[in-house]
Amino acid sequence: MADAVIEAHECILQAAFSHPMYRYFFLTLRDLQPNLQVFIGTITSLENAVEGQIISIVNNKGGVGKTTVAVNLAHALTRRGQRVLVIDMDTQCNATSILCSKDFGRNTLYEVFAESDVPIEQCIYPTEYERLFCLPNTNDTGALEPPLLRALPDSFEIIRQRIRQYAQDSYDFAFLDCPPNMGFFVVSALHASDFVIVPVLAGSAFSVEGLSKAIDLINDIRTKSNPDLKFLRLMINQVDRRTAMAKVSIDQLNKHFPSDQIFKTMIPVNAAFQRAENEAKTIIRYDPTTLGAKAYRALAKELLGIFALDSPEEP
Image (cartoon, rainbow, N blue to C red; front, side, top):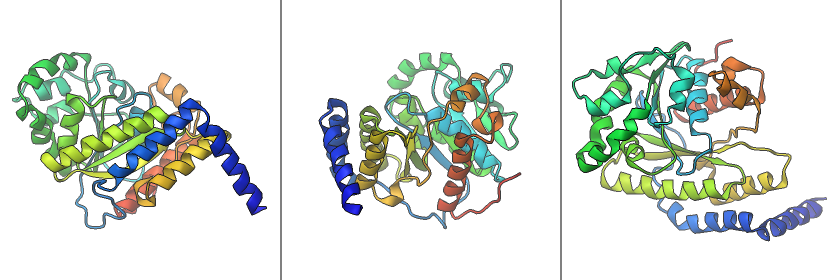
């Protein structure tokens, strides 16, 4: 029986490798291997970590679920007694749309970058979720990028200087929801962060390529400007275990990454995510009985375990 399973698995691998897209997936993972030898800050447990962890959610590829991770993991953590801040670094403002009412106030991330005299606490708003707060963004922030680029390298430090200490003192976790690129706002977020979560799609070669670019950038920033920065975990998203390629791609990711570099909790494909976002709700608020909601509750528990924190979930 075991031989038959192994043979079937090898047949799937051979068939997958014959497909150009999945051959690209495997080759991308293979090319990533040298970078993993210098992969920054592998973490098994953070028992001595101070409170107020700042975590960027990064992947160069769009559509991998960065905003979905930020808002749903944040809400799941608040249900375990954590105070959480979500900082919307993306000028598409999707996290802002889900977490903030339309009349949340005047100050946004724009003011953080453009008006140094505005106190940071006046840019942060409570949401309808207890213990969950948001620093919203606006489309206008994108227009600041050219002058901010002209002010490099000092402008990379704005988020770190204006937000980091306040976030550490006021919240248990802060998530920076980053845009799908490796541009100014992502680099600024990484300058301010302690850790990085990189979501990838099960079976997507392009999201793995985004992972490779994220690793290069994280290593570069940690070496040159932010020694606090560490890779926290890879998170496998949109898993459909009914498909052979999802199973093969997960196997390959587990083969190439040590177990302490991948979240054990994987987020399943679930149509409820799209319905929840259409109603500007988290998946737990939309329907706590869905597979997606259960997965994010499990992910929150796993994350707290990594930081040696134990807090029961509210009923």
